Image (cartoon, rainbow, N blue to C red):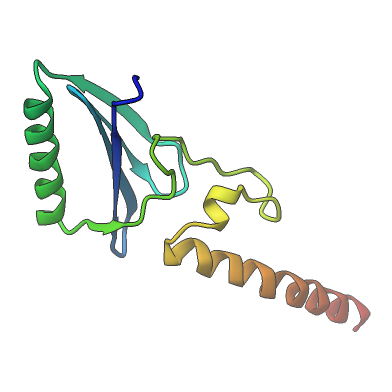
Length: 131
């Protein structure tokens, strides 16, 4: 990628009672890369090359319009200019910074529940074992 090359990343989320998904597109010159999957996972990545920058841009806009029609909502991209996989760690107390700083209300609700519920559950277990 040269200094004149600009890379633009846009991110979209979709949530309903059954799914919480992300879809991210990054356009550079005559190609675009799409990353998609469940929020909180790395997802899958696909790159497509085109014969011109205009053709790549037209394809990207068509894909974006398709996502908007399906109910996806654009969010501020958390990854800056490059597509980076999101990661989660196995430990509930050691979540990755990407997930903790997510603009998704789901991850914030999980953080709040984990932060408040863990000490309360431990206290309740101690009281029950004492009785």
